[in-house]
Length: 477
Ligand SMILES: NCCCC[C@H](NC(=O)[C@@H](N)CCCCN)C(=O)O
Image 1: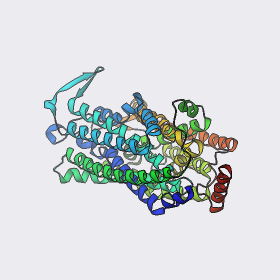
Image 2: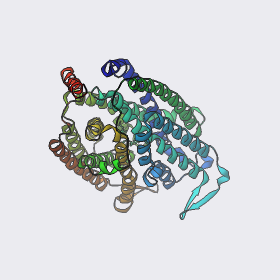
Image 3: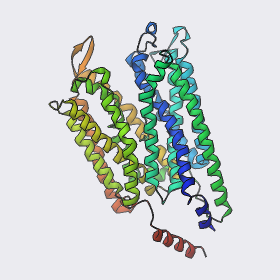
Image 4: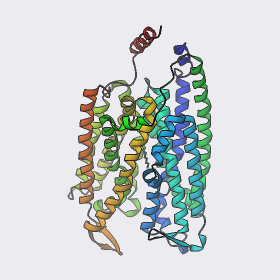
């Protein structure tokens, strides 16, 4: 009976790929809003009289870091993971998408009002109301989009386990990268089309996210139907999540290796991207107007390569090896960037393309490896804990690099703006790569000891599946 039902929905290719398209679209909307302010930085810093908001560089930094405030300091992400394991993917996904909508609305409200230029002092720092309200909105949105991220990972495991799981995760990440690419490419155009309005692109993002909510609601209907059908069978209920599960997760070496690999690897990529345009100007002599073009190739490269490597992992396995290769490439790329004599733009282009490969290899193998280490009923909490560890890096590393640049790397001033030597920051990124490589090697060793199966394909061959079913039938006469 169980097998019969599985053939109905989970075995239905159309159903599971439709589910992926629905939830990946919601994530695309989320990533679009996450990254949409980056290309507007110049306008945000333009004086109010010139049509901007008159923010300083520090104001922009405060706004950007708001993404992680509630996730990191108030542990909202971890609570989100626990809610996910207790309440399930439908409730948590809807909750997360609604939180995103509320956050974007508050951000839009903040950006579109000037509050008569009023300011307030918080913990000794002065905040304009516009900046404060927009940052609060972005912080709330950050909670929603990160919880949505872990929810979608669990949805993919639920629908694709034993099938094309890594390909599905790769495609979901590719959609997320399309969101980032659209944010970088389309936001400035939207802004221009609406008379240099900063708030209009945000409003359009809000409308897009409402469509993302509708898309998620369609998923909810499908997922409910699948669960109802499975409930009609006498399938054994999954063990419920208990708080003590958190301790069992954090006592696993395998979990820590993945969490550390995640924070080290992502800290050497996302924060690097924040400084990449400045690196292009200062080291490779690229015109500021074109400084974003070479770094922008990275997300676009990921769109094709992440599903490609995911598919490879599904069919051939070698997950731990893929992560090691990605980490070796990362070390090589950042080390090459750090060599002062290598300053031709062709080298920058080649290295960014290589980084596109490395940044597809590691995520395509790392995220689908988590369900091989952690049982499904604890997966939400495990993903949340990994995201939480990662958020510290995403928040702290740009801050560290900014401090190092200002303290040790200024080489002079042009038009009152400092010029930088990027050798030390790139050495720091190289060190992250070396540490990531060491952790990836330890993970492979742990896999050999514990038999997680990271080197095995995700897709089970029909004869293996038949064997599992036969074993189940013997166990449950
Ligand atoms: N199914 C895999 C989900 C992870 C995707 C991963 N996202 C993150 O790690 C987020 N915590 C941070 C995203 C920051 C966006 N600027 C990814 O590779 O995007």
